Length: 339
Image (cartoon, rainbow, N blue to C red; front, side):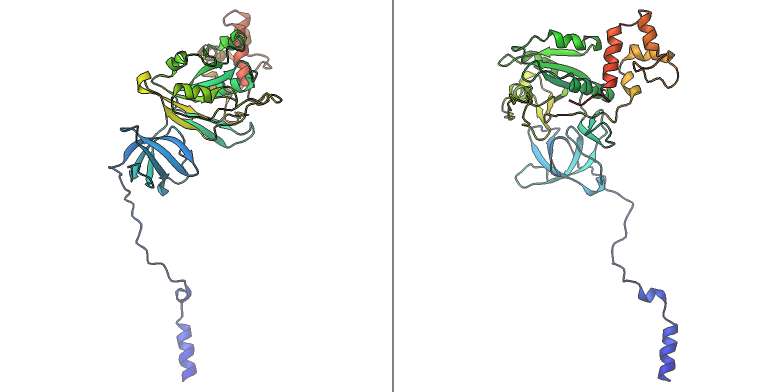
């Protein structure tokens, strides 16, 4: 009798009896917080998962924040306009949460190498890219300049050349190289008044980019008194500068000077352009873009193309040869040695 009862009870055992007990959790809801009380802020630097931001309504208040979980893998970079909740007092030990990243107007990006599919965003919402180039010590290298200008055009950002150390070399030869591109430029030298540079920055968000040792940090310290950016030296043997800035930092220009923001970026040795497509670069040259309509299908507009309409326009005198050559130099900068 006992044996039959055990067999009967076994017959009534179901698979569910062996399942792991489920956790008693509250069911998820489709309703999401509205964050009506969130405050607007601007990301000024990023360091190991912590974001330093300034409140839009009170720019002097500096707040430390972290990214909220609902944002997932969405990146937050210097220049991003974000919304915060939590402790926004800025007191020591306080921590706010970034709950929203507002739509970006521009994105300046690069890749580590020309065959690297991973894009690295340098800064968001910049209006101007200031390419800082020393006329001597170290000698100017146009490779980085070409690539930076190409990246600026691709991002819809206006490029500006800032030629430093004019007390050591004549800027005219380098100015002539970029004249056909109609790139604006400003010249400065050590110990000189930075007012001409400041005039180009007032009321705008500008990102400064250049090789180490070109005088970028010295320029930043002159533009923003109290910035205390470390200044490096140039190696006499290699002719290259030592990295002094380790992370991008957004600084507010003095209100007395007219206001605006500058982003000081670490000195770089290379600037990959794997993300750049020829057609996006051509759109930054409206006159050439109009001429290229007559190109055969699939034309890359490179000098090696046998029937490129740009060559026909040069032969007809419709466009200056130097401008087409300069455009093609930017186009080929993707495949040229970095630096």
